[in-house]
Length: 432
Image (cartoon, rainbow, N blue to C red; front, side):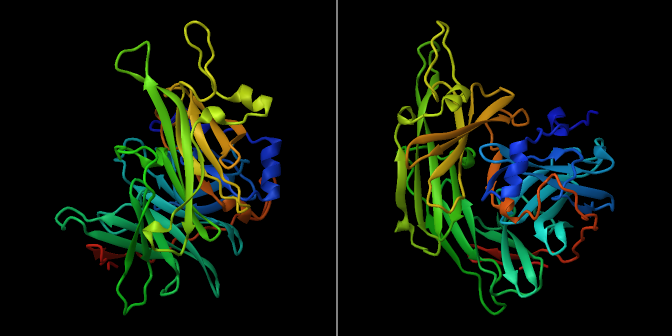
């Protein structure tokens, strides 16, 4: 079956191996979760059910894989043609995944988007909740919205919050804070960090007490590895950030280029360098960054595993010469590993050519300058070099292995509450 609007490969998820099933049973500390979900019916112990905005059934299943293999979600409606674009992961936090699903027949105007919160370990098993829509003029977008999970006396809950630049007609430099809280109340939910990976971080208490104004704090990111670098494009292709333990960790990947000897006025990739920094997560000072590790030249990377060396994508010239690993190939998207064992592991994507249907996810130990793993990644659903996956700790919250069946067919909930919004010019305003 072919559904207009979907990549054909979106209907055929990658098969899970015996190692993937074993990884789910081990509760691995984190996974790499693909940005685009697959539109396919899969059922296992992670499956959760809900309804669309029109009342039709929908289900989501999580398919974990051990990094550097990429995990993914499968979304299914009985009428598969109801989903006319790939469902997209907007954000994750611990057991929560915020997911957007475009609903409607192919000839309908695109824009009927449902947002769901998938929770891996709800009180009665995995759950899927249809969220209310943001106020008119605002959209749940990965670049603006995030999740903050927290614990209450009656269990786990979450906040969805987004910091939007002002709409047309409002002064420049003003922002609107849109907040959805699953539970009523606030004042003790904590702080969210809104990150511009080119520049810095805005820390914001998204649920202050009613009699208190919203306070924002700005922390600048470390200086770029390359001086005078033009800060443009999708910063996620070069930078990543995460909270690991009690520290905020940041990585930058810088690809080296040299002039092509074949094509005039063209440049070819010539290896890469990368560095990580960290700081206390609670610190609000911009001078708190500490450089942890740096690889100046990827040619110095140790590759002790012969299989990994063979798997690494390599390029040959017209004379049949094979370039060393990471030369003449496209590299992008560093993602920090979330292990709390003090290791400094990053993952990134490598492709021989930008238009190739397949790429590779490579894992590297920055501290020991060592290649740790290589895995094939089906990247045909991403045009050229593009952001394709994110780190997530959802794997440690799975209650049972994917291969088992559970009594999970309870209907998900549809939440009636609305988003609230507050405006600011770096102070912030409210909307219900």
